[in-house]
Length: 158
Image (cartoon, rainbow, N blue to C red; front, side):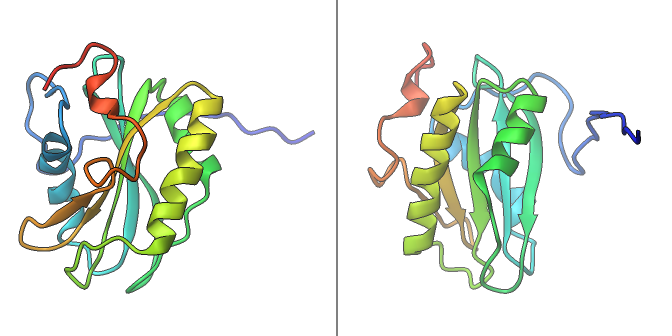
């Protein structure tokens, strides 16, 4: 029988500052953490910022790296990373290399699928962000397409 050992390790994110972890209390707070990781990408990249119970970042996980205008994402890959990191909540985000952060229909559908799948395992999806260029972004939570205001739950205040 051939078995492989599962190992989990965290690598420092280039450019991340040492010190206390910021508590995410709003979409703009999440964008401040995520945008520097996605803005320089030339292809579409989808990732998850995994959070503890206080909505402080545990780690950043790149779920999928695609092509110029698309990337393939399956909920199981997001759930796997969140479970392995013992995340209580997460914010997913991807960039639009065109610079226009307007979400596509597929972006909205994926967000709803992720929310449903994560609820089954007891992990909150706080938001789904689309990062454009020049500091522009769209928060599906702010747009009302990501049902409840997850940032305000779990005792976290804005």
